[in-house]
Amino acid sequence: QTHSNLMRQYIIREHPSVNTFLQRPEVCGSSHWLVIGTAEDAVDSIIERISAGAADGFIAIPGGHIQSAQLFFEKVMPALAEQGWFRREYQGTTLVEHLNESF
Image 1 (cartoon, helix red, strand yellow):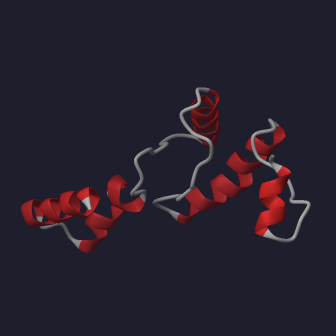
Image 2: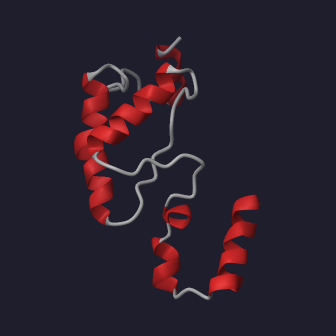
């Protein structure tokens, strides 16, 4: 609710075009933690947070251009898997089997 109130205040105050509004980082990546930079920066940031105990997972919402999503799936995820921070494949076929693998 706080996020939507802030967006509403921004619209009332600035009267942005739809295109301008959708390009704002807080709109395209409406999360509390954004990584802006290279794929390597994203990998380092994710590992830093997890290693520090500040996260036990993440939800990726690549923002901006479609290339953001492509970079994430082609560079970030493979790098995390290569370093052992993300699995390359699942052994089971159900969510319960996937979750039981980690325990």
